[in-house]
Image (cartoon, rainbow, N blue to C red; front, side):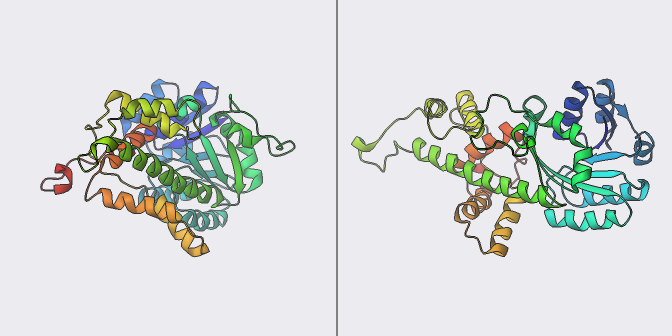
Length: 334
């Protein structure tokens, strides 16, 4: 099946490569001509403009936009809508706010176009591990695109099957879900990321407590000089708190137990904020997720070892880099 990809960054480029490895074809476009050339060298068809991109796609066209949420995605989808024709599909696979999806889906529908939102989790490792996808859109259109989603998904792998799921949608065990109409995919991904904040914060705070178990303020007999790299590793094996996030933490600590290669300045993608806002709208108490979000705000003023743990995990799963040191900022000198 053919897919057009706009945005060839960490995830967009790897999505294309994973598809091509399984026999799909791709047309690619990015403002960075070097990124286009790199994918073309791997077998994709490169385009040098949006007009060229559309011309090289076979009808009915499918264009996946993998760009940062906000103005650039908005402008790109607006431009695509003017170039595409009835029955073509626009996919937004970035971290878009779900209410923007609902608005865009309605606008594109009036032009005879289809809109699908795909919350995509897998980070920089998705090319090897596959991508967990949460999809919103019309059932018929999502079904048409199933060969793409099935290839990108991780598959059932060696994860034990859950008892009692007989007769349910088989796609779920493959790692992708048609969550509902337009907007539902990004709504589910938003909550996924909110939970991610909470899990990361729990690990970070726990390791910070372990690291400080030998401070002078404690009575000598209550101090423990703990090897936190070894603790992270042993928890991966048979405990009740293993996860990929713990795997990434163990790897970071094994390389550098002090994590002094991280400042502890932790950004947020915006989805944690949207999750908290949704909780407010629904009157759902979300103490852990809210506190985890606020901890990231605080990290930009004063840094603890917990924030370095968070930075290490973000670098591990998403390739996220900390912003450069700002001259005169006391936070960066701690």
